[in-house]
Image 1 (cartoon, rainbow, N blue to C red):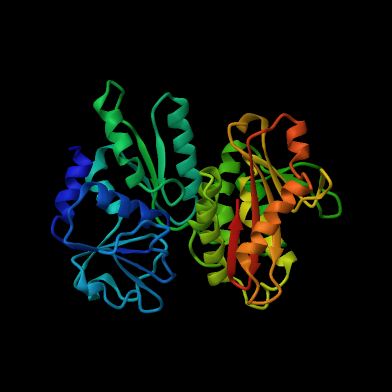
Image 2 (image 1 turned 30 degrees about the vertical axis):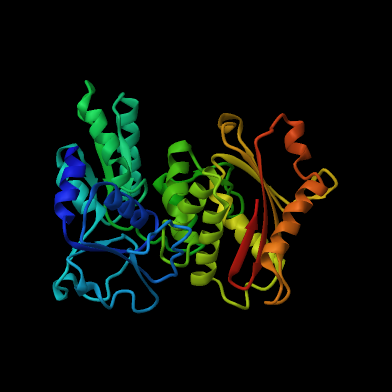
Length: 379
């Protein structure tokens, strides 16, 4: 048994454990509890509905959802809190022990961690240190708010430490990224002066073309800034979950994340037309432009596809994606049938023809149907 697995096993042994928040980090915590631990019980608590079957949760795992999801925290010995969850009570007012993946991770790997905290610039410094370490030939990982859940790299880190390689450095951002103020008269000048943008033309009449300066800054936009600007729910993990669902070819996971976004963010009156849903899907995948060339409403085959993702030349190991979007007119309409119709349309109109012409044969095709805040996907 490794140091990590032994620690978390002893820590949770015969304890009643609650996972507060079942996003990316909550799911990571659950997988490690099942893999290594023998707690007295496991409960998952989240504001949003949790699909037991889809998440392969056995009957002995209790689920608490809805507005009262934090009302019974004192019923547990240990509560693993996800970063996006704001406690309704101060931890000092609770009898349970509030912890997190980060806190447990630090207890095991304190000597291998570089922790970054502060008011501004945490993501920039974290990414900079990471790239310096990688360019120096060291095995470094970004974990936490702008990387992967720390539990997901624990075993990988230990396997490296057991070999002949040097001690593995670790960068981990602590705390939320500061909100960007959206004042149009100053924001672009601020981003240029800070190095997040560069001028791409001369200034004329107070206007100037700008561009992202390099791949490192592009990664900061993709992994942090875009999430904060585009998500209304406060769950900064949601867009990265969408990205993971695409890369793992999991249409059910994608549907779950779309519905969650609709439930938390979209007005019922907004979510009524096909154009709205087309824009929603396009927006949720737009931050994957580092891997894909994303186009919309272009001619291919015998018509115009809704959305196409073509892998860039350096990422041809990823599949291309063609998406057709439809909106139901009434609640009585069969969303699964409508999604299947959208999927058939991709083949009938040969929307993938332009991809095949470029020699791309690994192509995923999705028909997506919406009504209000529900979605169905046919693959």
